[in-house]
Amino acid sequence: MLRITAPRIAALLALALMVGYTFVLAPRLSRNHDQDPYAFAGSAPTAKPSWLTAALALPPPTPTPAPGTPAATPSATATPGPPPAPRFPAAGTAFTGIMTKAGPYDLGPLDEFATAVKHQPNVLEFSVGWWDRKFDRRVFDTVAERGIMPMVAWEPWDYRKEAKEDKLRGLQPEYSLAHILDGSFDDYIKAWAQGIKDLGYPVALRFAHEMNGYWYPWCEQANGNQKGQYVQAWRHVHDLFKQAGATRVAWVWSPNVDYENATTLGTLYPGDDYVDWLGLSGYYGTTGVEKYKSFDQIFGPTIAQLRGFSQKPVVITETGATDTSGLKAQWITEMFSQLSQHPDIIGVIWYESRKEVDWRVSVSPAASEAFANGVSAPRYNTSWTVHSEPTLSVPPPPPPAPAPTTDPPATPAPTTKPPARKPTPTATRPKTPTSDG
Image (cartoon, rainbow, N blue to C red; front, top):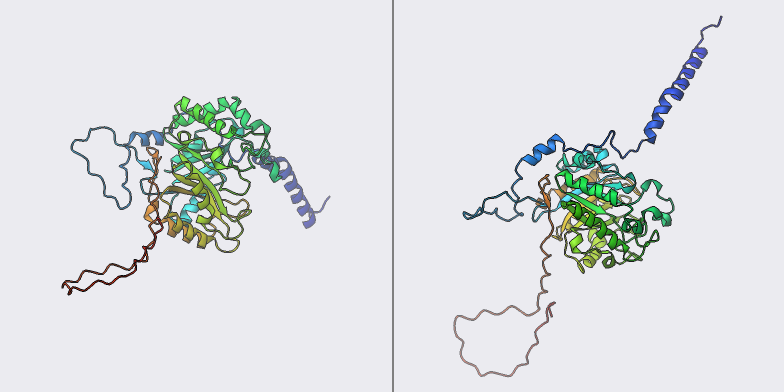
């Protein structure tokens, strides 16, 4: 008869743990690992959720006047009718947003950011790849229920097959621009157009972004694509949405900030009839931007290029700053200071995630405080509702003030007329030219 000893008890317990792990725990972990982390469980619903039906039944909120502008007084002769939809962002304001890796599938990062900066973002941007080949309205409703506008980075590729070698990232022949143009994806595009039309509220669609680079399959520098095909593909997708009646979409054309060897922006622009917002991606701390550069230094030159062919509103669709040198808080403070000088920038979206570096604001008390101080300005007091319509134009930036002249101020005329004197010849002093020539 075996004696019960401590070593034998320990051995039995170890054996039980091994059996339990092999036949119970390991299969569960494997199933969880195999599941796509960017997917909702269950079949996709098609009907409007009850909260949305109730919200759409309410009258739209009264549009907020621009800061410093008195509210308009209703005219006695005004024709009665439905009130105008509030614009987003409201006149004279700008929205703030964040982009997260999991987007609507995990709203934890959104809540952490909002708590850290004491402000709820107005926009949540997230990526959806074309490999999925389906439309799920929960992707949008989950965000809209929070009073936040969904912005989708709609990406025609399969990010699960992304090459590790940088130069090969854009190589996915099945997602070439030629295949978008030949109708291979038309059924999928039409399904999305119908799904967005049925949402009942507007969304932003950032289609095929950073097209002036080489690292995505839709870039003209990659994947066997040809010059001119990007514009054709954009217009093709846009036209399919228009034909489906999916018109409540803010189309966001969003290149990377210009860099050496980038494709010329003007050759990639589909035209103002096909674009609502001009987007830009730019970071302090990425490859080539290791040395400190302010917000204006990163974005200013490219914005000047955009103004050469379009006056559409600008949205900073991706930005972030590294804290490697301890300057993230300083960069954020400068960003808000310099944003106030750009009335044509109607929104800025922070990349609240960790990728090449940790871009998150919420993990840094100093960065969180800097962001909270900046976003507390009246300019960012705007809101989005399911009744909102995207702002499609902004006043042009004010012209620069003329440089002061060096002429001395005029001498006031004396109150007592001096005695007459015989004039003496003097030289004529030329007028100092101003900056206006």
